[in-house]
Image (cartoon, rainbow, N blue to C red; front, side):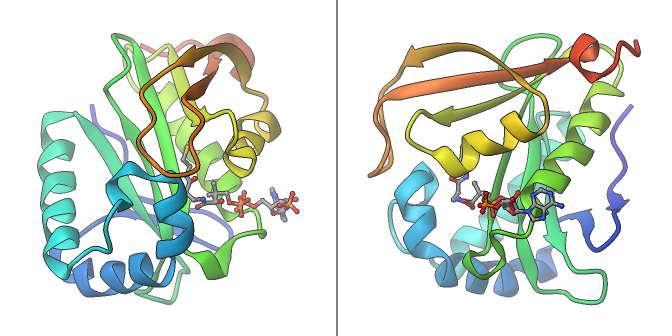
Length: 187
Ligand SMILES: CC(C)(COP(=O)(O)OP(=O)(O)OC[C@H]1O[C@@H](n2cnc3c(N)ncnc32)[C@H](O)[C@@H]1OP(=O)(O)O)[C@@H](O)C(=O)NCCC(=O)NCCS
């Protein structure tokens, strides 16, 4: 069972990426490069269009293999991405890691929090998934505010090899399981 490829929320649409999104995604990354470079290891260098083409190709194949379910965040009437949110099967069995970033012009409006809420519910509804994790550097307060707003619990803080310029090398690991989500059991 896979999550839906489109999730409609009040004022935004989460949908899987398609190859035709590459130029608009590339533009969004360039326009947001300063903040992305600060926190995202994949934004160490200013990207080329080919990087976003490769990214989209990998999201399509990862969707098919179940390695990750990555969505673009869009306004309902626009093809210009406002950001990205995704679930990644890279934190052990029964768990998915939730990641996100926003276009620099679209922060401060709750888009990431609401997209993360929707994907938390979507992830916990998948068979065999017991836990959603959000991992962020201790210094990334804007990111950490999202699991806090959504009622995640802080599980632990671990040392890690820092990759991006503002990272401290201390990673917060937040989680929400069925218990925190209200006790409903799936799968
Ligand atoms: C992390 C990131 C997505 C957070 O963006 P953000 O704009 O702070 O998050 P949201 O879209 O949820 O917006 C939250 C803000 O909107 C406000 N808000 C308005 N309406 C809201 C609503 N309905 N629900 C929640 N928050 C709302 C909140 O109060 C908050 O304001 P504040 O910043 O003054 O406290 C963004 O900083 C980013 O892209 N950073 C670079 C990439 C990154 O670090 N990714 C995470 C790696 S772990």
